[in-house]
Length: 194
Length: 194
DNA sequence: TGACAGTTAGTAAATATTAACTAACTTTGC
DNA sequence: GCAAAGTTAGTTAATATTTACTAACTGTCA
Image 1: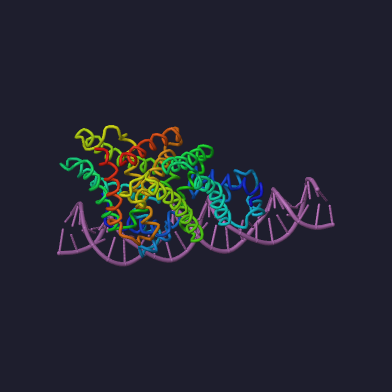
Image 2: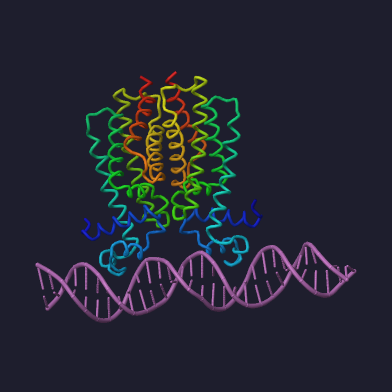
């Protein structure tokens, strides 16, 4: 899918975005990081947008596993969502720069091809959570009175905000621990309905 | 606080950011929108960063009322949070471009003065919600078992995600109606504990 | 008359990209 | 087996365009 060099370029691009935002991602900065000249980058990518498209694909493949692994699991709905949470946290702790991409709507806003891809990723993720909640309802784990769609928003929204806070704190707290706490409360809220 | 012309400039700047992201906010684009020349803008603002600082102040004054009005209210905690939600939705429906600013962490990342201000705004908002939840706990409206901090994340996170979705859909659904639905579910979750 | 708000015509620096070339490999055909 | 041809990954220099910003001038109006 990606050559070794392309992957290197992507990783440095992610780092740059994470550190300085999208405005920090210039060919000059990127080449400096890579230790090669600007034109050398064009041996591996046609243009800058190509790099960004690639970057979204890279992110998609990285995270899509997390969702697909869960779908066949025998766990309860809530535990399955919990596992999705945890795996994301792990992925982010391993490479905090990835967080910049999960909040990349702003980054990719100016190009239609890119913003569409971001939309797709978000919709796919929401659909996964929705499916799990529906299954949970059928098994009687989650009250039928609660709107699946709204629960999806609540789960994803609070997850996203936690990660955003982690990013804004310069990754100063332990994401997994805080995620655990958040999940305890979410769990309490859902279970009380039984 | 702002002259008439300054306010005009800010509004067009917000529109530009809303449409094309931060990269769309150039002095050229801005002057084109305003129907004046680029140098004319410098009659009203010293430089571009000055405009962005002003923009955050503009946003702060616009939304800080929403929080302060509530604090003295006699309503229940949940209703007070609901009102804060609703007033935000109203503000956003009146000027959807404002939404771009609420998610402006990315936009203002490159300048320390700016990103600090964004952090401040977020913290102030979180503190308001936290205070309301704490009060609700003391009045017995919200279970003491539930973590105030996590509840704040859940409220703010789901609110933010809803607004984000609204933005990504190009404002194609009714934000207030969907907000109402979200709140019904949040209400269900909290109240069941009684 | 003089401050205010605009203009035109520029600036230097930064931007993504292209042109032209090179050194070091690998493949191919006799 | 080895020279010719091609590829890969880089270089420096130059490109057109865009960026934020400035200097100097002009009209307007209280």
